[in-house]
Length: 510
Image (cartoon, helix red, strand yellow):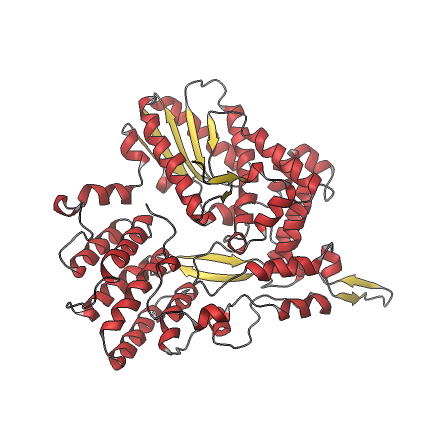
């Protein structure tokens, strides 16, 4: 039974409704009381049919005659950047909350009836070569599961499982991805993709691709390098550009007949029956990406004759191969929570920030810790291991803090406060931990503990006034409307239980 719809099957009004959903605006892992659903929809209604110049404050011209719009690209910090540490050291990833007004204007532009028809036609044309299969176009859930949950299931079914099936047809595989894809995308490549380079250069500023390019630059202080990361809408923009690469690649490898390529956004799996063809396709792909300023990640590129093993992510394969045989039909892998956490800690050292870590921590929380009425192990030891995992693996924040929240119920109030302060102290030694502070606050808020957070979004939860977006360029009417809306759901906030609900951290059964 099909539980999802591809965005290419949407009408323009359906696409508009899809992009205006809170989980499309922000697909960053956040506590449930951050709810952008009504916020974005209400703001979109308020903007009505306005264009960007209608939204801008009008400034007097230097000549004193007439006015000129105060455009957002002239101001830094228009979109809000949430920093998340990648390795517990100095590597970090910028996640961005696009300025809501600019987000709504971009949705309006893309889902205009004629624009939407041309974008859908373009993406369908990109998929004409059935040997290059894109499986990462946004999808909408038609089940009770979230769009994100069905997207993950889509990856599992059409990327991992299909890769395994292809082992019957092909003898070797090349796995690779694009280095810093979103941060390296050249915004001018959007009109190149939609209209060809020749056409785009002829009609500068007058094409749909130019409108999209301009709005993205307005979000990013006029920069032409990089697009914001953290929304389904930007995933869709990335698909427009990477679809262009698919077409270019297809033209370059016409002489090779026996191959299959699966692409999930910037991840590629290339299947052939000899390594010479693999190398030729990899070279052609590298050249196609270079044309628009992108490059392959050499550290994550490898070829293999073991198609099945290479089709499964290394962290997952390691876990499957090393799960104790006696534990495979039990709820927990090991006889104690500490042993299971140390096993997860070992995987974290070998495969940092991997999806398996989140899965294992979630399973431990659901099947063992939530059901333990009396934990006889040393809680401080368990918290210490869990926090060390989270420190170097940001994608585990929600599951790790869920575990900590339940463990803290087994110590007295004084010890609980000391442990939380020690956690904050541990993370204070690491730069760029705004995302972590958000999840630590989720743990602390029901305990009525207030910590010295430096993350602005934490200040908002505490009821302080913070402008996370630079909005000095907005005209007063729209600014007033924006200020009247809130994306902090106070009813959810006040009802948050001390221990995390599974719905906060669990998207799907894997």
